[in-house]
Image 1 (cartoon, rainbow, N blue to C red):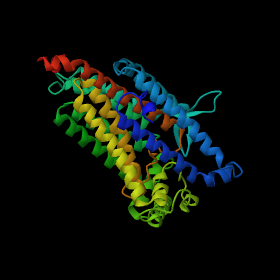
Image 2 (cartoon, rainbow, N blue to C red):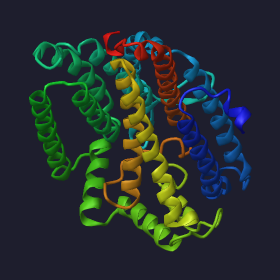
Image 3 (cartoon, rainbow, N blue to C red):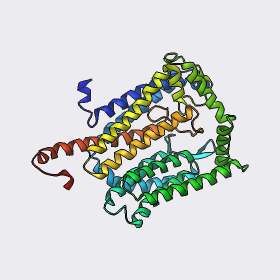
Length: 391
């Protein structure tokens, strides 16, 4: 194990978190796809776990490759990524593959593989925002023009994601707001922006509740009403999730012994956390939660040790996005939030989400690797009186 870790650069604790969550993912996906296998694969329960294992191996390879690339390269790449993601989002809205009344996916011709373009856009925007904030640090707090230049790409990307994936748009917007606050954007501008966002959110909820709309607006109307009245299809999922949590108890039923996987509509993706608690108990659920929080803590250490703003903003923004999505997934499972359709990062079954989460984790590891190298190279000069903040 020690010999294997020698080839893994960057924060070893983050690598340990990735490996642990990957193992949890393999166990939970294998357990939760039994019904899916009998429905679509003639009872071949090995089909989905082999498919998921293949994607997992590819994702780990992506993490390894991206973490070997110097983080400075991602600053330049973010501009191309953002421009490409905006084009892909527009194409998705116009001619994307529609599933559950939402055009969120693009099917790659000849491959049959679909990607959720919002995942790519989320990664691209956070990379680009970290670049903008780092380049405008000296006058971002006092210049209104700087604020609007930072805000425009946020509004464009979130606006393009919103029609088909409102929850992802809201989470991304909130992540960008926090990152802008950390990046020293004037708090008055952020409060005004937050107030405007809440106003539009209230208008949206009112329209959803008091209209007879179909499509995505109708979907959110059903979700809001189900959450408020504790009835309906969305609440059926949550009720089955509650049963899984209650029957799991403190230590769980054991691996592969879930019964609610036969009743939950998406036990391998949106509600995989409920299956984890049912089979491994409240203790298992807390351990998984702890590992996400540990990831966030390690990212905080990277930010603290960084002597430059771009890697600090990059690592913080990407980690915050992953952890926030995980916490929202868990909140939905325990009925603290309406059903959002957000997968549990690095754990839920799914190719697109897993691939782009892996790219984000690889970039975070690249930052930790670069920060360590910078600090090691500056250490002798610091000891001789050199101030690294002057660089």
